[in-house]
Image 1 (cartoon, one colour):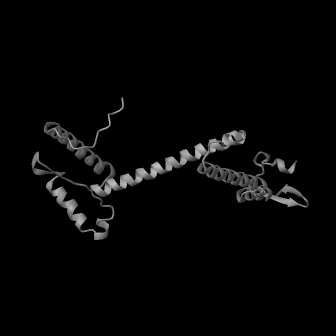
Image 2 (tube, rainbow, N blue to C red):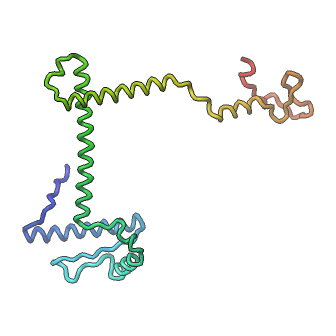
Image 3 (cartoon, rainbow, N blue to C red):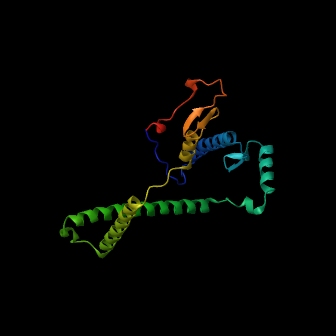
Length: 210
């Protein structure tokens, strides 16, 4: 069963807000502990709330001091390299969502115009009711389709690529005489000085008998 999406808004009820705080804080610190263990990183948390006094420090006071000291010793540019506040974080999320929406709208429009293009090709009656924007978009899709077809045709007209170097090297190995073999006139023979010759150790390529 899918989890119900939580509405990100301030919880007005005090009891419900306090219960949510305790539950979420526990989950946050658990995730932080898992992150440091799994990824081997240094992290700390300082939680201020009206329900805890003094503020809660994780993993400990010394642990927080050690992480903050390491952070302060970094160059100022490195400290603020990926630092965001809530407002900046939300703006980044909104910009990313808008970019995704723009991409989806473009893809949907291209599919719609492609469908209109094929409908127009079946008969001129499909041109009735189309706006100038539709006609311009259909013209663009037709041009892009023709470009793709032309590129495909050109790829078939090109000569095939030469064989890879590995093939040529393999052929030279087969053609070159092995140790213990020599050329006798125009024929290939075996050295008579090699008395360890065994006919089972010689592999002949079918290329010489084709």
